Length: 355
Ligand SMILES: *Cc1c(COP(=O)(O)O)cnc(C)c1O
Image (cartoon, rainbow, N blue to C red; front, side):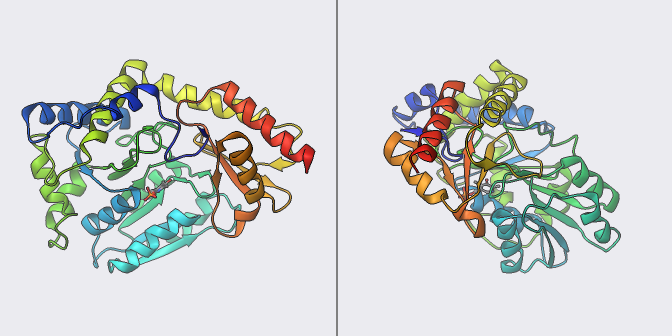
């Protein structure tokens, strides 16, 4: 079995080894120390200041998205939500569900987000912008500077789901003026699913999180922030994944963030430049290094998906929605090498030859 999927991804041997060990008890000094060490490293990798606050949630990414909407926004806000695919639509749904007034900036299929899209929303009284910086469902990587400039000019809180761009593309939380960053264990961090982390700017903690009326027991960020001062979480976390996270962030710092990003980018470029002979094209909008969306001329996506799985044990990402029948997505994150790319491409060639 080989995973060319994003979340879970093909995990590294040392992560799997830790996964086979006893899960330790966690109300201990040793666990607290480990968590504080993890947090310092994670902030460094995110380009977040030491003054920012982290919330370690035992939920998948969508749980963290919901928690951010609940803790950082309220009925007195007006949110602008970039909806360029299914994850953007999820943010819009969460705003509706939690009574946050919002406007969806909806992109057409294949459309690139540009400054012209944002212009009509300038000076219109918006208070926050919500975006999935890499809209994983289409592969579009939005221009963070474009969004950061808009947020600065209009004094918006800048709330970013960075789940599938962190550790795949450059990301600098403080330099981009980001107030909330959401990440999840099963994407760029190459860990099992189960832990999501929200990193909050000092100002959003002070001006929003600490001011909101309590509306949830499990998702109240204030309790997490209070507990984390001593490296603890209010409830039992996915302890085993946190041990794997500690090992991962320390080894990432040792390897160097730039080295990791170069590795993902090199693998991504290698894949995209070796597709000749396959009847496929890539979208025209800017792409993340995390995945390559493959647009086929005919509606063979699910058949090819099955073929790769059954004949080779290769798993790629199917796509939801209207594009689902003609698009597959191939991830470049995790313990993969150029040879793996070549094997996958060869398998696809064989499919089209025998078709
Ligand atoms: C994977 C992902 C999520 C989280 O999805 P879950 O299934 O809840 O883990 C959220 N946003 C983006 C952009 C993602 O890629």
